[in-house]
Image (cartoon, rainbow, N blue to C red; front, side, top):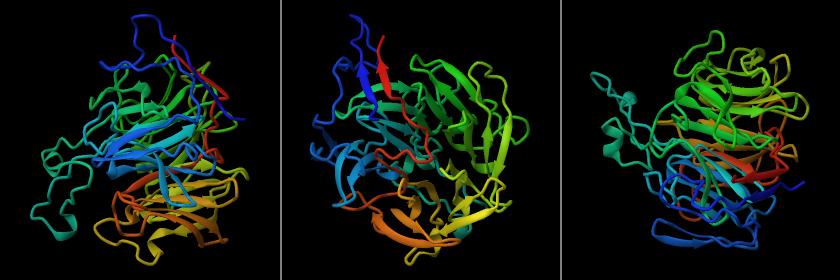
Length: 407
């Protein structure tokens, strides 16, 4: 069933949005409203006939500082949020790592673009930091980078209708985040946010209260409930939460009980038999297996409930795959309802759909972007971190059937 999205009219004199801008929150959302957003000094209008069409793909195009919806039949952009600015604002998103569409709303994580690591002494060619696109080199070199630190909910008009976190403010206090890398909306209308540099996954209600947390705020580790650079979290059908604990090289399934939020236990751990390195994403498949994005090994791997290897696909083996200074580093792999797997192959600058061939490999049946060629023009991407098919929540947190904002 399609989610029903209703925004209630706010009380007189009150704005439910941060900052000076006040948007009209009382209109109903449909898929027939047009959008016109600037990007790279070019106005692109949303295609009303194709916006939010099931089967379209929403892509978090990280270093282009934008989220785009594309029609896979034509490769054309039919909707966009993000004007390319490296400063967070009402029409910009910086270094986005995650986006998902539910109903006609788009949930976006403003991850930001980090500063460059320090040079080694003496520097070696392999250790020379390489500036990233989407953030001025000076900002990367001076240690500031280009932060964002927001999770935002955007309507078709490009208006921010809900926000958690403050523009470019890093923190762990109320309404603060520190490098949010993923967010999803739960069936009860809460937001499950992976707050990476705060080493935690938090569940936030629409009033911005934290109602559940896994991880010790600001503490990196592997003992107890500690996490190390968590990169995603999905609510499972059994009520547990599956967390990609990236720098601990594992995905963990943990208990999730809002009535007893301090009762936290790991019930399963997935490491692809101890071979995973940098688990960037994890999802539970309909057959009970778990799909891991094993980023540092440039592969996607499916494991069974005993952590045994079922299938893998290696992106660094693709013809034309980049070799230096980055590995391809796939960052998201999501199984689709047709059994194919949609892979965000970040530093190959492409999103690919693969039909698996057990136990290894598969046929690429769709590509957005061109391998090894970054850009922002037709059929070009720049470090795509996440991609999801509209209307397909296979392995993902199911959205609410009814959703309201306002008082």
